[in-house]
Image 1: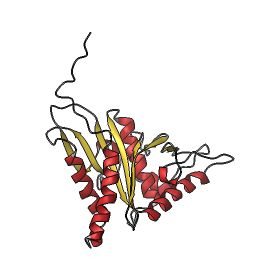
Image 2: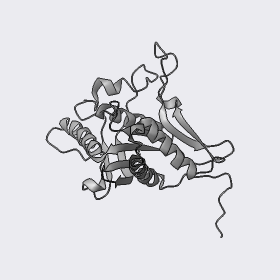
Image 3: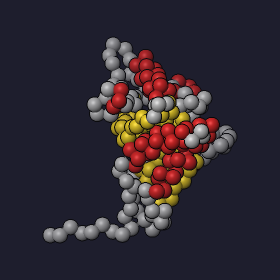
Image 4: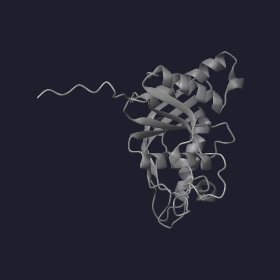
Length: 246
């Protein structure tokens, strides 16, 4: 019995898009620094570079690339919250166009030199990605972190240290890890709530989560990570890494 050819309406994003983003970001930062453009570096700069990489590796007839997308799963249930406020947004949501079928990709991005790139905000991004992954089995989720190598490693160590503080008498597995920092598999994970009911990120992170039907914040379950790509380039050691979140 011969296998049927895939339907022409079936589309997919390259599996190695995380690797392409990581290598592209670190290389672009090094190039632009050599061209005396370092003053342009910020999170918006990263978004522009990622958008360029993504649209160069997909067909825009097959996928919509939606920056600043107010994903429905990140909003409070209608009527639960007292004030609507600004909707919670994903940095990118890439989804098949009308008439196409396939997996979508949700992405959050952080630039380590930004004051907004605190360990608590990183954890909040991971929680939001997990909520999307839990509600949409056909959506892949990815977290991208970029900046000078020292800033990237310091932030990852902070997340791990805060996670470990909640453990009593045992060691938690590493969270977001880099192979250049000694990880063989590139995999890790965190538990939002530990065995004593303590929430990683505290009230600040909890307050950034959507309200559910019961009027309480939606808390994600355990989060696992798989390193999809990592690169460090140049004398400044610009580092970019992408993890798949599930």
